[in-house]
Length: 611
Image 1 (cartoon, helix red, strand yellow):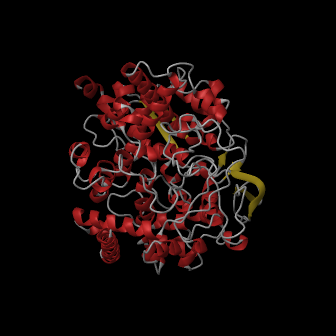
Image 2 (spheres, one colour; image 1 turned 60 degrees about the horizontal axis):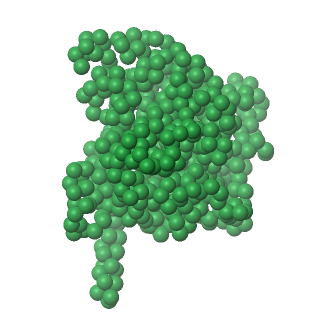
C-alpha cells in the first residue's frame, strides 16, 4: 500500500513537472514551430495543465419537482434530455444543467451595464466586423461551415428573454431603422445562486447525443418517430413531414434552420434509418424501441468520430493537430493496432493515449462535466457563412441557381429543396468555400437579419454582448487566464498595420478593452489553422473532455451496449462513407479528395464517365 501510494505521488509530480516544462516550451518557442513528435508531447502537457487549472464547475441546478420523466432504458440508451449519462449524478450534462467555466469564478462576473456598452458593440460591429468583400477559407468547403452549426445545435442553447432588453445607443450615421437598438438578454438561471457570479442553464443537453435530429422536447421527439422499425420520419424532400416541423419552436434554435443545416439533418436522419435496417437484419428479435435506441447510439458516436477525425483536421490542418485528433480517437497505436491490443494483452492498462478515448474509463478529472461559457464563446464562427450562394449541377457543374442567404432561411428551405435535388445541393456545398474567421468578414445578412417573428437583429452586435453579459473575459484577460502572454500593442495583436490602426481607434487606444471575439478574429493563425491559437486553448481542453466524460464513448462504448454490428458500423464509417451510402452519384466529386470537408472536385461529363 505504501509503495503504491509513493508510486502514485511520484507519477503525479512527474506529470505536473512535465506539464510545466511543456508550458515553458510553448511560451518560449510555440508548439506549432516544433517537430511533430515534440509538438504533440507539448500539446499533451498543455492539456494536463488546462485540466488542472481551467475547469470550474457551477453548482448543480435544482432537480425538477417529481424527478426525471420517461428516461426509459437509461442504462443502455441515451435519454431524451441527457439525464443518467452519469449514473452517480443523473442530472450532470442534462437539459437544465448550468454551464461551467474555464476561468476562476472571480473572473466570470458579467460586465457592469455601463462597461457592457463600452465600446459601443454596434459600432464595433459596423467598423470591424462588416464584410467589405468576401474573404474565403480556401482549404475548406461550405459543408464545414454547416457542420459546426449542426453540431453546436446539439451541444448547447441558452435562449433569450424579451424583458428588460439591453439598450444600445446608435450614432447619427447608423442606418439601423429602429432607435435605439434593443438586444434581448440571455435567459437568467431560474434558480440563481445567491453567492458568486450569475450562472446560466442550457436548453439542450451538453452531451454529444445528436439531440438536434432526435429532439429534446417530448412532443418533437415523439413526432419525429416513425411507427415501426425504430426509424425517423422522412418525406420525399428529405426532411421530416411538415406536420412534424410544425411542432418545432421557430422562436428558438429551430428558427436558425437553413439549407446548409437541412442537408446534414437529412443526411443523418437517413443514416439513422440505414442503421436501423442493418441492425434489424442482424438482430431480428430487437423491438422498435431497441432499434431506435441502438441506432441513436451508433449515429451519435459516428458524428463524434466524424467531428474528431474529419472536420477538426480540416479546420486545424497543422500536421501536429491532425495527428493529435487521430490520437484522440484511435490512440498512438492507431486504428489497426489499437483494437488488437485492446482485445488482448494490455501491458499499459486502458490508456486512452495508446488506445484512444473511445472504450477507455470514464473520467471527469475531478470536476462534474458540463460545457462552458468560454467554449460557447470561441465557437462563435458566423464569418464562415457566405452572403451569396451558387448551386451547381452534379452532372456537368453548370450553374443552376444563385441565391442570397435569406432565400435559404428556415421559411424557404422546402422551396429550395423542391427546386434542386439533394445531390446537387451537397455537390454545390462541396465545391464552394466558407468565409475565413477574420475581421471585416461577418455576413452582411446576419447583421441585418429578420427572425421568423419579424424581429430585426444584428447578430454581430449580439455576439459581442453575449460574451460581455455572461462574464467571458476580454481578449487580453482571457489570454492571461489561459497562461498566454497578453499583447502589449495593437500591432502585436494583429500583425497588420492598417488593422492595428482601426483597432486602436475603435478601442480608444486601450488594447485591454479589445473584445475576445475581435481578438480571436484579428490574431494571426498558426499554419493550417482556420481559427486562432487563443481559441485553440479551449479546444485542447474541451475536445477530449466531451469524449472522456461521456459514458457512451468510454465505459459503455462496447459491444454489449452498441451490439457487435453497431460497433463495427462506427469503426468502418466516416463522413465520406455516409455521403456515398446515400448519394452514390457523388463518387466522382469526392474521388481523390483527402478530407470530405476540403474542396471537392469539379465534375465534368468526362470525369463522370471515367469513374
